[in-house]
Length: 347
Image 1 (tube, rainbow, N blue to C red):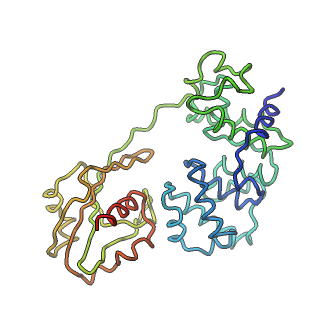
Image 2: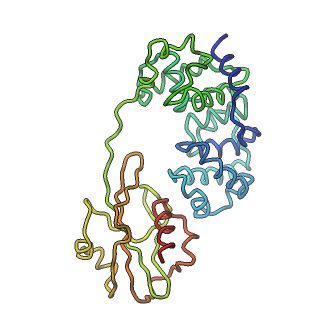
Image 3: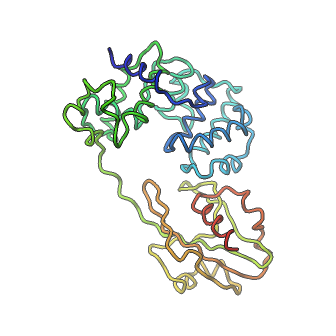
């Protein structure tokens, strides 16, 4: 039995029942694929349901303001996905009259859509034989064929894409693509794959050569940068605080945060209050205390953020306008959302 037939046979018996598999509507497929980048299916499922209820068509998503979209995305991380999703929804709604492009070459031109997502949409929705390659696919192919080329190298990306394209069943490309992704997620797992019941056990190179744990190969990761955030949480006697939108192209663009002083190391309260940034922010009388006695380390892909939340209690000020009772309306990074939850229980 050839590879694609065996794979699809396995899939028809073992596939996951997911809501976006009940439709060929490219809007819903696109939404699910963007959400599932860097996100487990179990986590993304609730967000998908929430989004499709709030925005049942691309027009509703396009009409929403960015802050609303970011607030609904809160907790999924990688917020550029949400901003690009919203931008592209507006583009399709206004420039393309709500009609989603129907070919890989047109879909990949859309902002926020790369080779994988364009391949998934074009194959599932429009039956175009374009192979998907994600972490699951890399793992299945590298093990089955015994490929040592690093999957995160430019050579590896080209090699695995070409191989997947050769293997795809051109008569049912969408089914093949979903089959190989599910097989990697459910059967050929990163740890403890189900080799004893694998339909490819007699021809898998990694199993034959006892190299399951060695494959796929990855080049060494980029060095992780360490950052130190000091959030200044204003609390006035009449229940107000300061929040501002995070600008620039760095992490959490478009989300809201408390005044922030970033340092090159962990600092004490005396070091904090002696900084010009602190004095400029709080020239009036106030008391300060550290909320989290234990350091909070928030880990992102290429940076670890060591965080302290300093509570600044002061009298009323006309410059301080955001009410604590309304703070939940603002989209914030999950780091701050977790603080707000903990802080609310201690107030």
